[in-house]
Image (cartoon, rainbow, N blue to C red):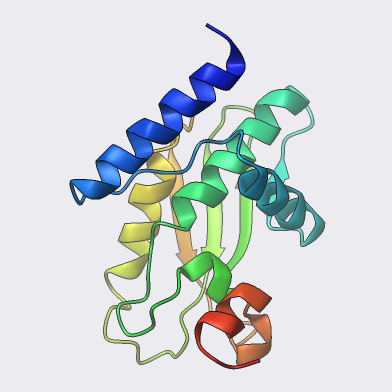
Length: 157
């Protein structure tokens, strides 16, 4: 089967899962995922161990970004990645992932739950080993950390 047909099959599976109410990450080969991956690397979001194959790092980065985009702050209709709540994601030589994240406010009602949601999303990525999510408040989050996409979605442009 050609890559195009495989990509179409993956897209159909994703759409079918979404129709059933099942969250599914977008195919890593999508243009948006590739752009997000490149932006993630530029922003310093994902750092991978030098011993890992660059193609594997790219795939994992695409998949990690897609997985993080499935987690939403329940009070804000934008995913946590676009909100700028993910500060750092590191992949070590054993494909273990260590992530730093924050909240829009220290008193967030889901402060105890959201790191678990992020951990589960990261753990769902194929090839990921152990996952450690750290909740940090330095630097404090502010609206300037949101992507343009998030600002448009929230009419804050």
